[in-house]
Image (tube, rainbow, N blue to C red):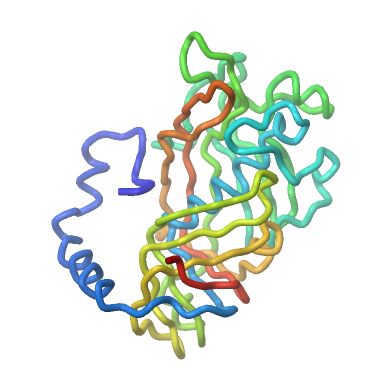
Length: 287
């Protein structure tokens, strides 16, 4: 259930088809018991939507919070490698990487009407065709860089100070079917289901671990590996993205306990993602 959160009713639970997926999950668990450790090296990797949602959260969502960029906030998740003058100039990823912060996305955990400064919920470009386009801002921080506030100030309760928070930070769908991603990959790994994460206090150097990986050889899924990890540097990693799956494979995921501030506040935020492929990524094993 990691990441399966939404502002919806019981139909959301029904759509997971828990009974229908039980046999598949049981088979994967049995295969993991006897699976070898994931081999190390540089490989092409395909990440499932749930893992990619956390990647978006940690390596895009937090560093675009403008209070971190300006040195006004460092609690819980550090500051940021970004600078105010990176807008419109910094190559954050490849041309396949398009990201928005959208507080109007139906069903998202980061969906609302107005933020705690009275700014209407809105959709903001963050990355367009790989280029960095904008921060998450408050009225105060937006004024410091000559922009308008984009409605991201939220407090965890009435007695807490509002902070700049992620809304729904979404990697927009691409044009590839999932089966095409696999078929076009000669030598790689398909990694699924987050297990661990670690990222430095500038949001640059990271390592993520997944529960399971499948070998891909000549466009076909093969043997299962356990304890797969991948590491990278944020702009280099996103620059290696060469395909994102279509809307049919896209899902709104959610984080119900995103921490920030000192004392710490917890917020509901969303992340939209579909499976995507990344080239020449360092992979290894989590022990």
